[in-house]
Structure formats: C-alpha cells, structure tokens
Amino acid sequence: MPTLHWIGKDKVVNHHHEVPYRVLNLEEQVRAPAEAPENSVDNKIIHGDNLEVLKSLLPEYESQVDCIYIDPPYNTGNEGWVYNDNLKDPKLTKWLGAVVGKEGEDLSRHDKWLCMMYPRMKLLHRLLARDGIIFISLDDTEAAHARVMLDEIFGYGNFLAAIAWEKRYTRSNNAKLFYSVKDTILVYRKSAAVSEIKEGRTASADANYTNPDGDERGAWMTASYVNPATKAMRPKLVYKITAPDGRIVEHPTHAWKYAEAEHLKHKADNRLWWGQNGDATFPRLKQFLSEAGGMVPVDLWSYEETGTTDEAGQEIKSIFGSLVFDTPKPTRLIERILKIATKPGALILDSFAGSGATAHAVLKLNAADNGNRRFILVETMEYASSITAERVKRVINGYGGDESGAMPALGGGFNYYTIGETLFTADGELNDSVGTEAIRGYIAYTEGIPAEYRTPVDNPVSPHLLGLSPEMGWLFNYAPDQATCLNMEYLSGLNFGDKKPASAIIYADRCLLSKAFLQDHGIIFKKIPRDVTRF
Image 1 (cartoon, helix red, strand yellow):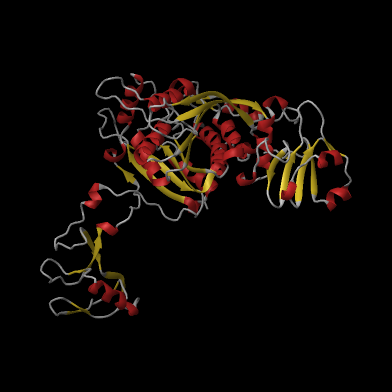
Image 2 (image 1 turned 90 degrees about the vertical axis):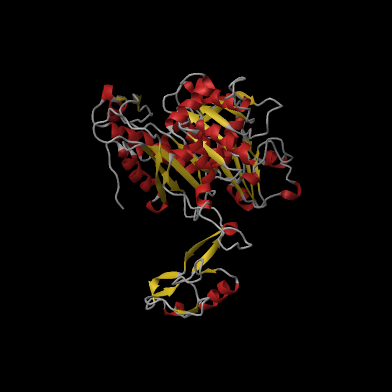
C-alpha cells in the first residue's frame, strides 16, 4: 500500500503515547429551564488543547464513540495557526513553532499540518467504536494528503467515501482559472463491523414510484429481469417464459436474474410487468414503495439537501446578531451525517468544535426523532466559552426574541470543562492534587475493568474497590497523605461476603505478605506508583 512521508513524521507517529494524561475540571453545568422540551443532558464541551483532551477522554470513552465529525484547519495559508504540541525534539521545535500561513510561508506548511493531524487521528481512532464512522471536512488543499494518512491509520479497506459537498451555488467573477464550489468530506469506518449504511428516502426518489395498473399494494417501480451474465455463464438461469399474450419468451444471449422457481412465484404474485399493453419484449419486476427500505448514501451532496456556507453564516447571525465566526458549517450538513451514521442513543465527538454546529445539529435531530444522542465538543481556542458553549446555551434555551425568525428552545444541557493538571508529576509520581476520584478512574481504565464491573467508592466491600467480577476483584489501596500496606489486617477488613472472587489485584505502597501466600490466595500485588501502567 502506498505510504505518505513528510518532514517530522518519524517524530509524531508515536507522539500520542507521550502526551500526558490530564484531568478535566468541571467549570459550569448548563441545563434548560423546566418548561423546555426534553433533550440529552449528558453532554460535554471542553476547552483545551484537543490533543491533550482526546488523551484524557480515553479512560471513559475508548472505543465508545459512535460517530466523529471534525472540521480541522484547511491549511489554505490564511489561518495563521501555529503547531504547538509539546514535542521534545529540539530540532523540530523552532520549525514547528513557526506561523503557518501567508505571513510565515516556507513551503512546508503541508508537513506541519500532517504533524498536527497525525497524533490526533491516532487518538480519534482509539476513541471510535468498532462499528463507528468518522467524517472529516477538508478542501483540496489537504484532502489528498489526508486520504493517504487516513489509509495508514484506519486501513485502506476502511475507506468509505470522499463526499463532494456543494457548499455554495454562486460563482466568483474574480476567479481566473477554476472556482471551487465544493468541499470534500472523507469518510472512514473503524472496522468491517460497518457492513451496510442506509439513509432515509428522499421525495425525489419516491416520486419514481407510480401505480399505472391500480395495484392494491400501492405505488411501484420496475427493475430489469435480464441478468448481466450470459447464458453460458449462468446456464441454470436459462428457461422459457410465457408472456400474457401467449408468446414464449427467451432472451437470445443472456440469462434471467432469477431461478425458474422464483420466477413462478413472481408470476403468481402479479409482480411481472409487461408494459401498459402487455406487449413488452421482456418482463420487468415490480418493486413496491411499501417494501422499499432506506437508501445507500451517494457521494455527491447538493446544497439543496445540506445547506451552504452562506446558510451557516445566517445561522450564526440569527443566534448572535452578527457573524462572530468566519467558517461555520450548516447544521443541515451535520444532521445528514448524523442521520447516516447514528442511532437515537449514539455518542458523537467533534474535536475541532469551532462554532458548536455539531452540538446544535445533535440537539435538533434529537428534537425531531425523540432521540437521546449525546455530544462531546472540544475547542482549543479562547472562544470555546464565548462562541462554542454560548451558541449551545442559546440553542438549548431558544433564541431570536419575538421576531418571525425566533427559534424555540430545544432543551437539554451540557457540562463545561477546562483541561487540568497531569496525573503524574515530572518525577513520575502520582499527582495527589488531581484527587482520588481521577486517579481511581485512571487505574480502572489501565486495568481494563469492564464498565459493568466497575464499582463506586460507596460499596459494601471496601472504599478501595475499583471493580468486581465473579473471577476478579480490583482494589486500589491508596491514600494521598500516607503510605498504605497490603497485610493480613487489610485483607481481613474486606467484606466480599458470598461474592469473593477467585483472584484479586491489589495496589498499595508496600506488601508484607509472602509471595507464597499471595500465590496460594490468587492475589497480585502492584506497587504504587511503580506498577501504575502509564499510557
């Protein structure tokens, strides 16, 4: 498979492993007023470097995200963004820290963009569920590079589409050569667990169904009865058909699509159509609208169906009163993505949240189909509170005043977080200041305790219990202000009752029990913090 190489790739391929785990600090809880409609409330908006935030989401959400939509910098040369990830290679520091844009153009901005995107895509891949799908909006500047990079991360066989989204319907009179009216949305699945994708039917597609013979089963359309394969290729599908007017019909070169037994069922069920006068050369098969399911998505999306960048700007103006964000996406575009890729209870992640359009689309779709989709938005820039979160607040509560364009409240809520301290100190010790709850969550994640077996601090066995299954118990004997010990006194204080597991993993600062005793009783001792597995 072709691979993509760029300056700095060798330094960023595994950079996501070096990113420190940080805790998230809850700053605000937003809920709709009591009179607002019901909508999802278990949502998050997080302000912080999205590379660090994505790493910090792993303990709770690895392989749990059903749909990812991101709209990263297009790298057109106008953004003026700086690659600022904490890479330790001094040779790259100055180069990566240079401005990427017209004011700092050095013909290597594509390399810097790939350095920025690669570790983030690795973490997004880990967060995506086995049957999850990711959608990435780009323009021609980086779409080709991104395609090869994503083939490497997701696997070439998991590429699904390069959707051409018609983002505008007017042409520029100032263009000299070509003028682009579309963006590209790259679509990948996590694995072959996504084997079929359908979306709702359109009015134009349903308009193809009619009922010229007044069939009581309703409107229908026809499909060819002739097989693309020749008679020599499919001899078992070669037979003679009797037409309504008595003609004996056999295709001169090709087989039929159906075995003769199935054909006789079609005939008995009045599913053969020989034309209005019954004199067609070959039959066609009736396909009823009432039996038609969803439609396979196509890779060309018109502005009539998904909106334009102008429409997105008007949405922002209607919410804030002015165009406070330069490059928003229309909610209709993201709604179509959600309709394709999510069920009513799905979890959606957008780690380049921008104006918050993804959350807006999630809440709109929930209101339309009574769903309970949840969102996680991550925004690095300082407008995370003033624009991203503020937009979602106004959507939840309604906006537009008493004017004709007023939008009613969609309801719901979210928690607003900022990125906090690292779990480990510079010396590799546990950082007590992050709090015991954060440390417990991290240990439970690194031990791979399934969600159904995790336990809260308030449980009958021990406040140190992290999880309990019939085979295994996990205990984290930790105190921020004193050393802890695994000894007989500690074991005697555990109250498993009739749920005592066959084995146990117990963390503590030291152990006074012999190796033979531990082995005989199925206990694995892990020393704090040396044996705390790091990302």
